[in-house]
Length: 256
Image 1: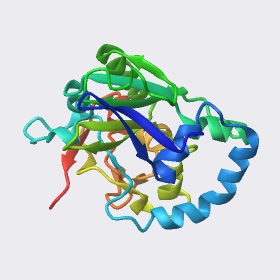
Image 2: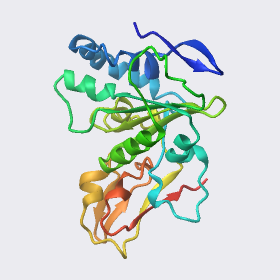
Image 3: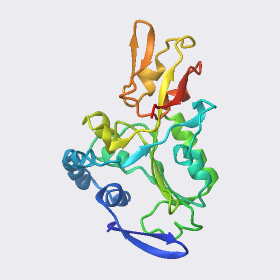
Image 4: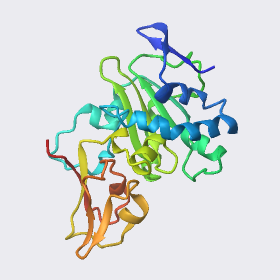
């Protein structure tokens, strides 16, 4: 029924009790129906009030690292590709947030099969009981690249001790955590990355793509001198950098 998870750890099949989110809710991805979707929408405001009080946040935003300043030291947990390169097993399932929103009449146009799990164990997902596809490292990286082009945000959960983790590729219209951060004014639901976007105004051509089409948090505004990033709203995802036609946006480390 999707209340107990199972996978291979240290060569043994293990079982785990899961929280509601992330856990039991996501485990319903292949049995989700409109009734359960409507119940979740009703429960969401209560859930988000609880999640907003978690410290640290439930998931951490991991930036697109293409435009991180080259002299900046980037730790493994801050680089989504290094997380994948260090893993041995990979699995992809449908995004339950988009699936659920679609069942209540709010399906967006973003891709569906891009919720990733990874493990440092060999064959960790071969007997995974909750569905999805076992995929290669190469396909995992291709999915990540496609989600970046699609403007989705990498939100990661990662256990540095066990090497187990997951990467959700989120949109603000469907993702429960991002809806909490944006619509429900609960930015603590997501632990923002250690980076913030900075626009080089000298190179910016004022096209507005970053503000009008890419930023999921509406953290980029236009003033008398052009476009500027509001650090308090920026979650450091780097989605704006990928689409900048003049490459004038860089991710810089936030002050300690």
